[in-house]
Amino acid sequence: MAAGPLIAFAPSPRGGLGAGLALVAAVAVGFGGSGAPNLRPFFAIPGAACLSAEVLMSLLPLGVVMWLLTALPPRPLRTLLATLSAAAAGLLGLHLSCPVGTVQHLLGFHVLPWLALGGLAVLVRPRLRTRAYAP
Image 1: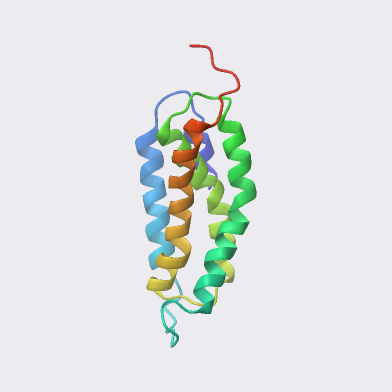
Image 2 (image 1 turned 180 degrees about the vertical axis):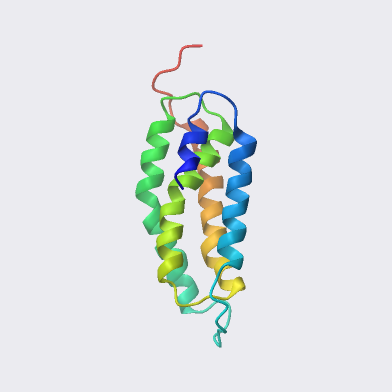
């Protein structure tokens, strides 16, 4: 969460390092759950609650990062790393408070929305006007 913005906004290209850190974070969240058995079906009410909480907790940090990214030329990897780092705040808060610890739930309702928000930001960023860019 702290290294992502430093790597994303660094002037030198360090995208490979940031992509590796994002992959490690996704695997750690998915397989670092409590392992508690869940007797409810996969698409149950707790899953929808986790998905909506993940998106809502990530909106403010994502908005701030998207605004900060408008000062730089659009680069997809930079956008992905910065937005995944911003959305990690919501991911961490949700992961610590979620009572369901199965791998299916964590991957489906915690990690996938996190990755989807990052992918959506990559699609939206080129459509935003760059504030200060001198070629």
